[in-house]
Image 1 (cartoon, rainbow, N blue to C red):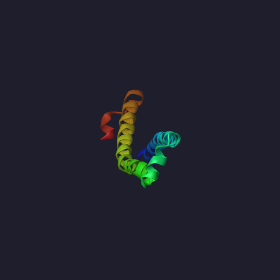
Image 2 (image 1 turned 180 degrees about the vertical axis):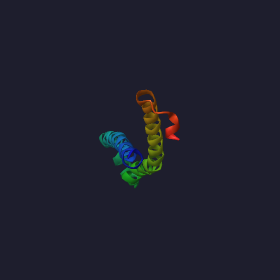
Image 3 (image 1 turned 90 degrees about the vertical axis):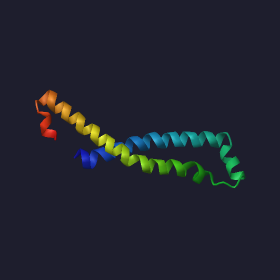
Image 4 (image 1 turned 90 degrees about the horizontal axis):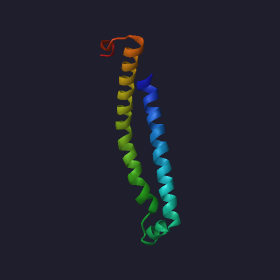
Amino acid sequence: MVMIELGPILTALMVSGRCASSMAAEIGTMRVTEQIDALEVMAIDPYRFLNLPRIIGIFIALPILTVIAEFVALICGAVYAHYFLDVPFSVFN
């Protein structure tokens, strides 16, 4: 269940919450300080220039973070089962 459903969902929720809020705050600040207007004057699409690299970075990083989250979940499950339920580590091989 962790490998199929919870790992990817929880990782995506954490990444989307963190990245979306920071992107919105930075774009809002850039709008207030007229930096986006300056990009438009230079004939640069501000949304493609500012958001596209971040979205591509998220697409690249999200699978890697999902694998890390699943690995950590399995390790934590093994440690919990070993110390609290007396299940040997050899069961998790």
